Image (tube, rainbow, N blue to C red; front, side, top):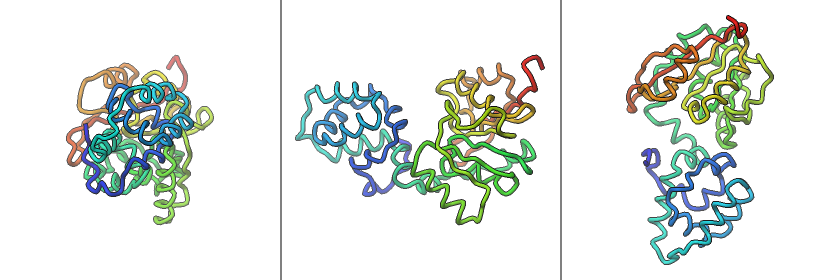
Length: 265
């Protein structure tokens, strides 16, 4: 389903696919738009080569697509738009992150985060930092904020944004929620938004690993306003939650928990 983020399609083309990161290519749904992907890989074999080299785990899928029949006389603009809309978030991050930064839902009240804990002099990890909504909300209070972001263009965006704001305690690093580049018990606060839920046990274990005993783990937004599998998992792990409003996007849920000192607490 299209997100409605892109208003000007002139910024995007099939060549935008060459800006995708390995993890983004791996996240592409192999069951969706088979005819369109077949067209892309057959019409533009350099894109097929790029995908296979950038994300070897997708090589078999690319090969399966290229073995299919494709109508190379099909309306290219129609196919291009379908592909772009299917990867709308990935391509916005890779091409022009300011589109995301200008979306209404990014304007949620920062007190939903800052009222959860005193961030003064805290070492903070912000997972899936994106354009930095959460990181910049706490940066002036925290001792240092580590923005974990796997998309190179977003990392560049975060660095430039921090420079413009005169913030010297923002550290931008590559990483994923399932593989955080920090030692055990590293952070006083570990937080993330729209990142938790694909690999529940692994993501939970990794966020808890890098958080100090007595520190806090926060997911805001951590879930849509639903008692779904994510909600049930987090509640079973001892998280508290509250509802809050994302402008233009409805009610969401935030979750937080204090990491116990040891397993027996």
